[in-house]
Image 1 (cartoon, protein in one colour):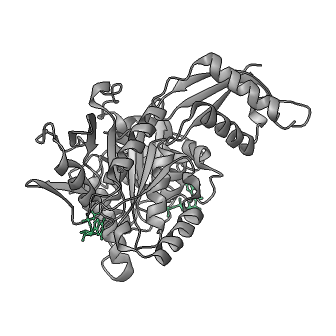
Image 2 (cartoon, rainbow, N blue to C red):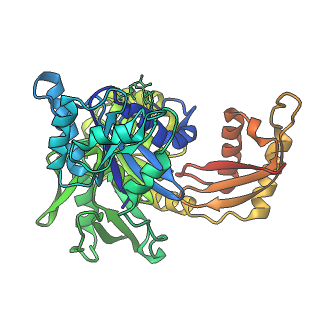
Length: 434
Ligand code: GDP
Ligand code: GDP
């Protein structure tokens, strides 16, 4: 399971700046997707080949006790409880404050590894800064500059050191790992129980340590699947039910862990920011995705039309995914949904042969050449596959840095059509040879 880093600290110490820096490499991947807005509190970061989750508690003050800030304090508490590692930020320019001491006292009881991070440390005398913050009783402070990027890579390496990197993919014959995600009350546990109830569950009791996702293999229509059970669902007796508190972190961990995401929407409700954010994370993580519009039994024609328009507007960035109208309660539309899960998994893990990729690239360029940029005309020579789930297509050539996003989207469509890659996002990378 991907480790989760949670950023804590009083306002203005630079948590948002650090969050942006830790997740920035991923921004480019989701930029320019119509309708997609980022959730500024949760993101995916990467060092080397490792992904991790980052949570910014900026705006959720862990020591506030009243009013609206109380709900934010609750969210901060939940994030602290679910963190694998906490980064406690302080401001090296402002020096140690009473508020820092209050937070430090809270974090010493967190039962989680805490690293004390002195931000805004550019140009400061390290020895003086270290002496001041040492008094917080959280060990040696790590000086960084979030704004300038100094010390960040090292910080992440120290923070992630206790968490082993994932080994390769699980054995193929277990079928796709599927995570059923969505906001509270959309019908996730009903869907899981419908899926598991009708068909044979291969081994219901799977051991799982606290950090492991609980994986439930099951069979349906002669095919194997593994359900990832961290999306806010817990087993009680023979059935699954939603845990009391919806957990964004657990949802994100399930998304990271799965091959295919089933995003459940409630047909009786408007598409909310939370729906869009969860969908955005699946896209950001590059996961194959199928959407189940649930409770279709409970809505009339007027609501159905309204919902279609709402989806077209707010989930436009899910153009690659199939949408199914389902009723988890009445077990309607479930077979079709699973067919799309199979198709999305096949697309996400397809082998894309170099000659055909290159031919598709040449045809795409012949139909529409990339725009000239100043004196340079980008020249794309050949393409090969650089990864799976999501499929990564690496294009080699010259002057490729200047290719605009709109042209990248055009190429994506050409590859999707040529290889019939329904249900998975696609990534295109350029390698320029000079
Ligand atoms: P948050 O409230 O903890 O999320 O803090 P922000 O990320 O919004 O940063 C607060 C202020 O500190 C902003 O004006 C940032 O530009 C500034 N800041 C953040 N990181 C650094 C840094 O490394 N050095 C300096 N000098 N300023 C920084
Ligand atoms: P979760 O929080 O996403 O796990 O949602 P639940 O599975 O607990 O469902 C929330 C409520 O929606 C329950 O009262 C379910 O009975 C109801 N529900 C779930 N699926 C359907 C459906 O397909 N049709 C209708 N009409 N109600 C449903």
